[in-house]
Length: 66
Image (tube, rainbow, N blue to C red):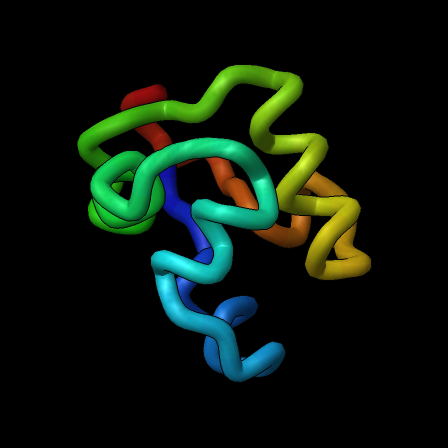
């Protein structure tokens, strides 16, 4: 699964740590999600989408092999 979290963070000018604090996870969790090493839960994906004012589909995209 691909994601646009890094781009969304840049648009809001917030750090991984600031995002983590706002959604209730660690900075390491945000980093792992951005790198595609961890797939967030539905609840976490919805929290991020709400924070960024985007749909889940705008932040996360399935890849061919998903």
